Image (cartoon, rainbow, N blue to C red):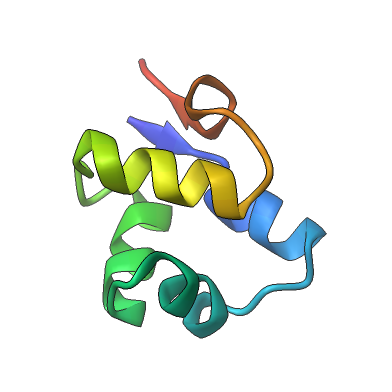
Length: 63
């Protein structure tokens, strides 16, 4: 699975730490999400999508 988290986060001018604080996770979780090394829960996916002003479908690319 690939993500657009880094791209969308940069578009909003958010750091990994700022995004992590908004969705109540550690910065390392955001790093792993951006690298596609972590499969998030539906709740976390929703929270990240809302923080990045997008949808889950736009955020994640399933190969």
